[in-house]
Every structure is written in C-alpha cells, then in structure tokens.
Length: 308
Image (cartoon, rainbow, N blue to C red; front, side):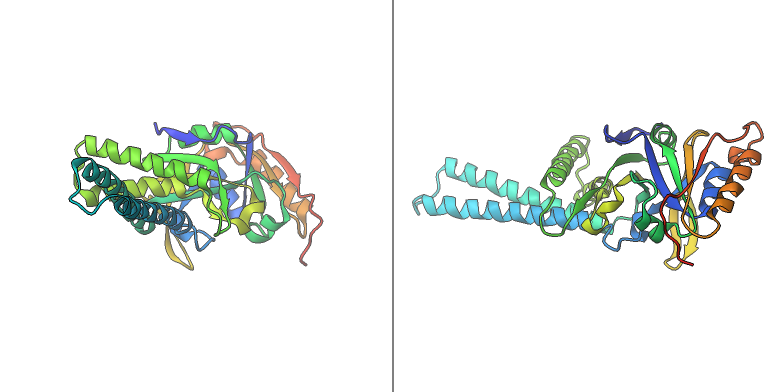
C-alpha cells in the first residue's frame, strides 16, 4: 500500500472536466490515467518550481558570500586564528550546501518520473468547459474514495494537494522553504544510509523534489482552483497525441469514486444527460456484472453558454 501525503483541507468533492470518451474509459475500466508532467497543457509545468527554488538558493549562496567578505573585512590581516578559520569554514560549508541543492534542482528539471492528474474545486465553471470539456462532462469524484484508490496505485509515492499559484515575481516562500528544508533532511538521511555517491544522491533527491514542487503553477490558471494528484513512478501505458506517445500511469479507482456527472453547456444537453442516465442504468462499473446500476447523480450545466 502506498503512503499518500495530502492536504487536510481538501473539499469532499473534486471535479475533473473531460470528454464523454474519457468518462466512458474511466467508468468501464475502473481507472483514471495520470500524465507525465512534461506533457501537460501549461508549458512551464516542470520548470516553474525548480527555477523558483534555484533563484532562492542563489540568493542564499550570495548571502553566504557576502557574509564571508564582511567577516574578512572585520578582522586583522594577520594570519587567521583557529576560531576565525572555523567560522569561515562553517559559512563556506553552508554556501556549498546551497550550491549542491541547486544541482538537485537541475536533476528535477531533467527528471521524467512525475505524473499528474488534475482536479478542480470548481464545478460547472465556464472557462474550464471551454478549455477542457467542450461538449463534454464534469465528473465529480469523492475525495475520500480517491484517496483510498491511490493508496492502491502502482507507484512509488503520491501527494494530493491544492495547487499554489506563482506570479513569476514574488516567490511563494511559505511553499518553497519547506521543500528546501525537506530536501536537506532527506539528503542527511541518504548520507546516513550510505548513499555517498553525489550523482546518485542528487538524482534521488531531484525525483522527490519534483514530486513536491509539482504543486506550483502559473498564476494565470488561478481561477481553476486546482487540486492535483502527483505520483512518482514509471509509466504503464502510452497514448498517441500531437506530442508523440505520451507516458501515463493507470490508477485503479473504487466503485464509489464517481459521485456525479455534470453535462456541459451546448446543443442537446438534455439529450446527452438522458444518454448517461440510460448508460449508468445498463452498463456496470468496470464492466463487472456484479455491480448494479450506478448511483451517480446527473445534472445539466447551469451555465447559459452556447457556441453553435
């Protein structure tokens, strides 16, 4: 069973905007697919977090350099005594540590083991209908059932958290500092466990760091109120699209994970809703005949929008 880290403030229902085809796949196969983070719709997905941390670490390096310069200026030019040497060595070690963590960030920028499934706290939102589910649906998932599902996932580790939005200027210190602190802690743990090879250690730390900073996103997406499932693992499925064969990980879901479906605005929404009513009545979840009719609430979008 996978140990899942998650926010304690997650809402009871989370939403996924998608197509009828994807809804059918999720329901009939009893699974959703996470997508490798390099293939998501935001082109900065795998760069924003590492670059923000790199800038923070550069500032810390510079601060250490300034501290060394200031200290040297404050003491006589005579040979340094042992106390001075020890103090300067302490500052230099701290500076070198920030440099080492910048190399870890470089590993995170190159890593390909983070997979994402995006959800929203917002139901029936026009901008998301337009962006992700034209003539589609909004699936309402039980957060409790999703957490139970991902504990059984074929992955190394999973986080489920609110996305933090970053404007590119003011860094989210309360978000970044705990990641840096956790990376330092894991570095010490790996060293104690005998992981002395710097390249191996940085590669492991880079993977773990990428999983943590997967929840930092460009502020232009803030209205979506995104919650993410981020998993560290290897792909077990590939699908073709304009980016090539996209790596994914299939995550099985429990029978009661889907609570509701909203049919999006557009032509024939009433008919599309009726089709789902018949579908859930006659098609068992995961194609398992032991399941009776699905207890899924169906709604039509209340958004007064049409594009025909």
